[in-house]
Image 1 (tube, rainbow, N blue to C red):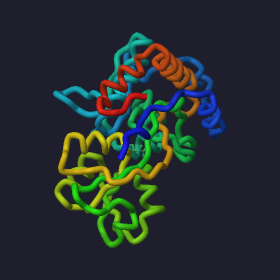
Image 2: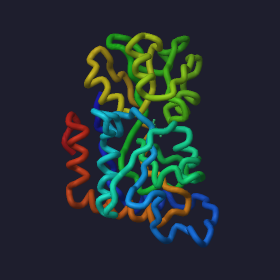
Image 3: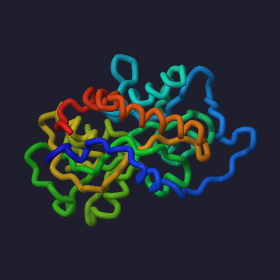
Image 4: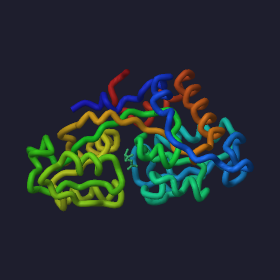
Length: 265
Ligand code: GLN
């Protein structure tokens, strides 16, 4: 099994075009998204759902990770500091947290999907991902078909859950609220396998040698940072910072920091 598909994508014009055309309601004149406004002054407020290591995880009372470092680059550029709110994934992916001004942006290893793009706006993609299967070491569950009649753990509201609903016929899906609970269920044998994004699963098996990734499903996902629909000022600011980070090596530095075992690009 390789981590090659977890490698980052180049931020290309083509991917920007692919994201265009999502519907957005016309915002009011006072907050039309043309001026950069933050929900709390002096802060950029991020919504995320913990734990999602190595993208966001609590370590010694602070929240750290790949996504955290990327958003810190935006904060630095805006001369503010990042505040992170841990909140259920449903409020993040539905756009509700952004609409109610709970946060300025959502950085949660979140896959850009057509449905989500109707409810929030995504920045340019910043990371490639695919679904993968994790089991205790030594099982023969290398396909979803092999799990027929068995229990497959899924994380609520995620693309992994959607993939399992479509592709895991005859398999009993067991829903978990977060990645931590999902992985503990694999380790303790509460489920026979679990599906989630390859980046987080490879990180987990690296630290838990009694588990292994047995399959990747090539779903071709791309992560984007979410902003409120129509908040173009912030979306374009983040895109500018992502582009610069790619060009000046800071993206690579952050990538190597959080994916030390990944093969060289
Ligand atoms: N990338 C997956 C999704 O968007 C999982 C995200 C997460 O659990 N934080 O659904």
